[in-house]
Length: 198
Image 1: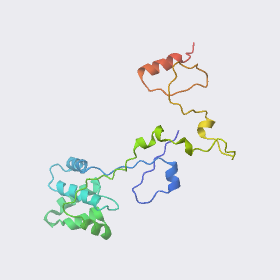
Image 2: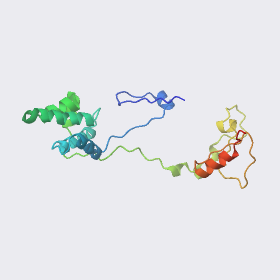
Image 3: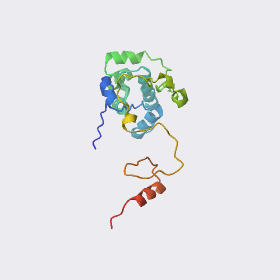
Image 4: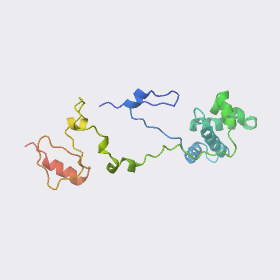
């Protein structure tokens, strides 16, 4: 049982055939408050932390190819401490955050009061639209249609669409199966049904 994780930094597009074969887990940008707390861990009470948090928000608002990371913001603070009065904010941002003229220009267009409040939530798919009451059986292929067709997976596996529970416990055979919630009671019941070696 091998599980493989592939991580990406949005540098390249994922092809559609690959997306069809892999589940995609997308990590949203960190909330600014989390970035602030992370910076305070390494630079407690540093006067540049509010500016760095705002810089982080602006990199998100500007939709830079890569927003500022906590590591880059920490490096910026360290460089500002090292340079002292000779520190130039514009040069530090270019050196540690934007790194290219295009990204730097894109960041310079962000309004000073811009805040990153939307985390690009997915559009909502209403589950009510998928209720069985909305299923129209008239759209199915007519029974008398004699054209050849592939059987559905439910037909192959002999799975019925009924979701109602039977009133009586069915007879247990070697082909019986089901899904149980993992509780102490269900575990004890399953163990008691198993044959113990003598």
